[in-house]
Image (cartoon, rainbow, N blue to C red; front, side, top):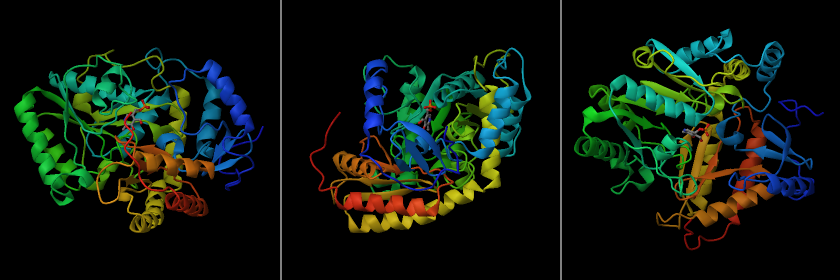
Length: 456
Ligand SMILES: Cc1ncc(COP(=O)(O)O)c(C=O)c1O
């Protein structure tokens, strides 16, 4: 069987249409057995992957600008991940940490204490998915403060479980007809520079004033357990809050005994060019949620935070059968080794320095691109009807489809579905980055004008 990982030829190679006949055959099988609600960005069935490419069942090799939604930052089947997972699988696969502990779990928590922002005394608890980590962060904050309310933001995405659906802003497809949702969640305006009514230059100041006033008048500071925010929003459109907003919000929380939770599930582990996006402005959250990039593709998530908060919860109050599974922990230790060995934070900054000028240049030539934003290897373009802020999701769809047909895996996002986001594996070669950008440039040039806004 062919092996994935970085040794895979790092090339785009199209040998059939996308999807090809073998993927279409598998898709027909899929349709008869898998719930249709679980959808695909691009229905090519992957057989091997590594570095910056995904190879499908027809032998097509696609350039990966998605990393499985910001997960395979170290690349698929990264050597240290494969090595440690293989050794761990041979030794034992599961005991349940709550039944009988093992060193790998402790080592991951030590690494989280070392790498997350702040030099304070920290503790961590491990889980399986990002949503589960967010749920637990809220549980911990409520328990530690004895307060009920949780503040989330417009355009936020925190997951698909009941509590995290309540925190997530966008109805379709995440929440539609899945309610009623968990209570005591309050939504605040997000500091979204492009769409700030009085202009981006006023965004940090006014958004902070709005949020704190709304908290004061509608909830009462003393009733708020936690404020949860993505330091750069993910699914909601790669919204980068203006400098100053996050530090002031964190300070406001500190002054009012509110737990400041940074959801770093998409931004964490080198993606934005620092270990965590909070590092950019030296923000020190009380709790940090992580998942995705933490374990090179295996399911692992964590809540890391101040020991006094984490240890406020009674013995036995946190856990789960699989949380911190030893194989996933081994993968995380391998992924962290890869990140340090290859300076993947530096690599993310390099990717940003290659991509941002090309994207800005593209925006200068195509007024349908209203904004180019992001940091490191977490970048996006927002598409609108030229000269307006009216979203152009139809153009985003056409560009993504053209890229897919040309062998570039690309994801969309945004509350209005009008954002193209770029999340390449941090180990992607410069030649693939260049080629992917050239494909994107051609797709934008041939996308045609924005049509009427499709709702739904
Ligand atoms: C910021 C953020 N929080 C939470 C989640 C939920 O993570 P998961 O899909 O692992 O439950 C995601 C997933 O996209 C995310 O981007």
